[in-house]
Image (cartoon, rainbow, N blue to C red; front, top):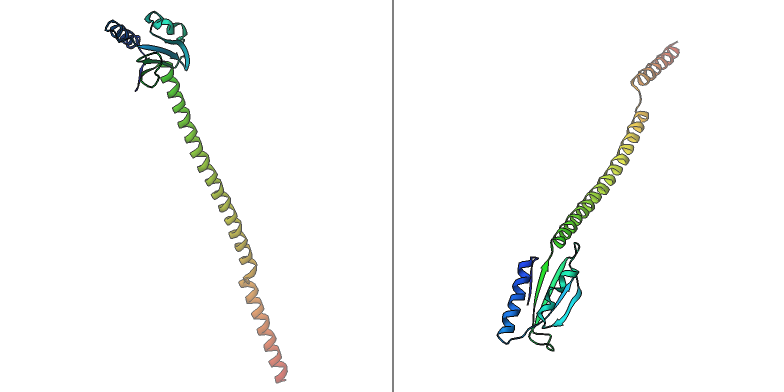
Length: 166
């Protein structure tokens, strides 16, 4: 059974006291201690070795793990006490913040890409509309040309009738 707690000297002192009590009752327990996955106290029942972990405890240490066994040979019956240091908590918050920033950046990049694609489509549509407007201007006859053409046709028709009558 593994118990994860925030690091405190008092918690480790309580574990050591419990080990003393068990030894006094005749239930000798073996223990080993790890600091950041490095075994700093080999499996032993000598409680004088318990404090050796302090030598390995530095500012960037993240985890202290105390493993307690019923005897020296059986490994599967053990209790595990894990203590997270303040550095671990600080690093986890930093990682969470970075992941949050990365996620926000990915969302913003995707939105930026989508908006650029929409802008390109809008610009292409503007070009199409401008072309249609320009084509429409050249196709429609101008009113002035239409009036002059009709007037010329009318004069030609009248001139023909006058020639025929004469």
